[in-house]
Length: 140
Image (cartoon, rainbow, N blue to C red; front, side):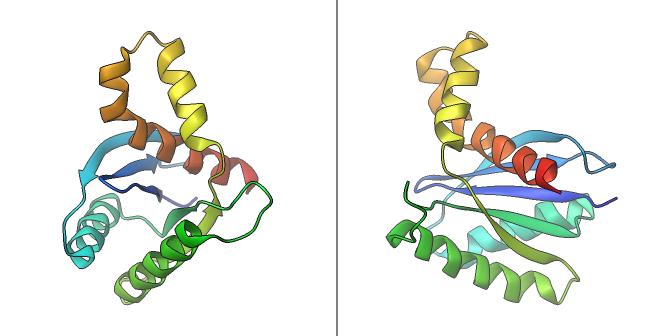
C-alpha cells in the first residue's frame, strides 16, 4: 500500500492530510501558513512527505463547475509541477485530483461536528485536504 499526502492550496493556508499505512483512510494534519515565497511552501509540503515516507502527493485541482480550468486551476497545476520537480528526485510522484466541493463538504462536516464558525476558519483547509485525499483514495 501507498502512504500519501493530500494538499489543498489555499490563499492563506495550505491544508494537509495524510493517509494511514494501508492507504485507505485520510486524516487531517495542521495546515501550513503560506509564505511570500512559494518555494518555501513547497519545501514545507516536502517535509511532510519525507516525514511520512509518502510515495505520492495529491494536489487539489479547483476545476470550475463545468469542469474547465480557470485561473485557480492553472495556478494549482503550476504549483503541482513545481512540487513534482522538487519531489521527483526523492521518488515521490505528484498528482492532481478534482477538488470541487471539498471546502463546502469540509465546512458542513465541521459544522455538523459542532465546531464554532470562528474555529472552522482555521481548520477548514486541512478538513478540505482530508476530503480530497479520501476521495482520491476511494477512487483507487
